Image (cartoon, rainbow, N blue to C red; front, side, top):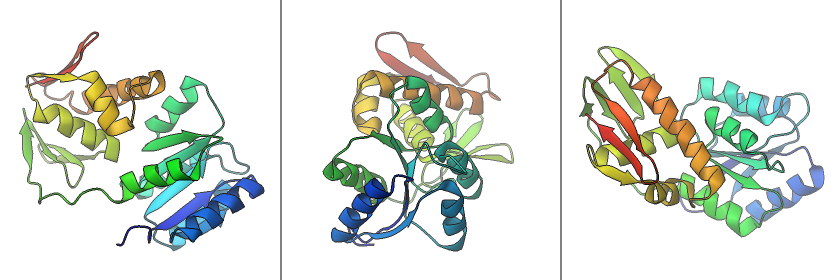
Length: 226
């Protein structure tokens, strides 16, 4: 896939903003399907294949959070960016809980949106990943799978990337700000809170082996202890 040729599902109930974003993305070579509510978007998603979703949170019929929850049952991997006018930390964290990969607050620049989209779509090609041992677990970074005995758990893109960062420095301290800047783009308060949510989710998914722990070294970062 060439840069800028991605197929985008854009969902925004504010028609003036949605039209502007659609036209701006298309002028840069993206193929955009625009829906004005979550119900239309879910129908479009089930009928076609997309490379990325850009979703508003507050929408009629089906809101963005409910839409993403349904989509994640069908597709664990497609990148999702939330567009939101909300500023409450709880709303941002809720979006990450449902499997969002990134968010951007209104008003925003098209340049910033496109940079964030391309960061998710055009990830550098990595060599084929094999299963990596984490205690009694096996982790496949490329497939975003975590296996315990014969039981497999799907990981979101962010969960897999975060676990890989911790595993690369197994039994060593991983600096909090380095992870935040690498995976979230900055180490601000909102991103720090969302990372805490993802750490909690990984702890739960690794809880069947008591020898595997993710320690919080307050003020410094995290350590994956195996």
